[in-house]
Amino acid sequence: MIRPEEIFNSDDELDDEFEDWEGDAYYLEKEDYVGLLKYRKEYAQRRPDDLYAQIRLGEAYNLVGDYQAAIDFCSKFHRRYPKIPDFQHVILDALLLLIVPKMISTGRGGQP
Image (cartoon, rainbow, N blue to C red; front, top):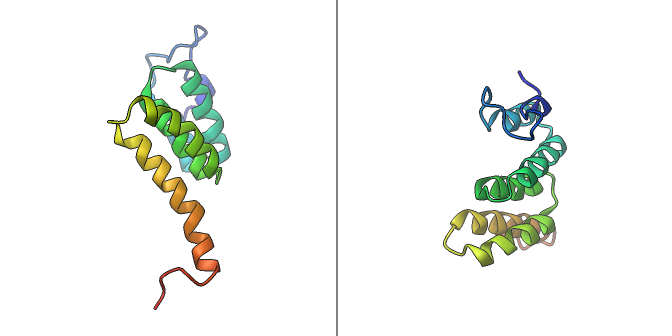
């Protein structure tokens, strides 16, 4: 499998030989979510107009457990693009991941 740093050519453009999902696949297969976050940050910075890249970066924050960063990051895009539900989904995932463990640990997890 190709290493993600090999996907970009010297002009910081995605090399035509590779698909944009290959970098993600590399880290997801290894369950290296910290590496995935770093890769997605770099990818999103190189492509600031690619909203899908921004959504995937928000998802990566959730995968590493940085839920507040996911909320903060995706909130600014949600305000600009309120009709794109993916930003809302990342924010809702982060909120649930913040709240549900606390509810369970305090006995308010909805268990009968």
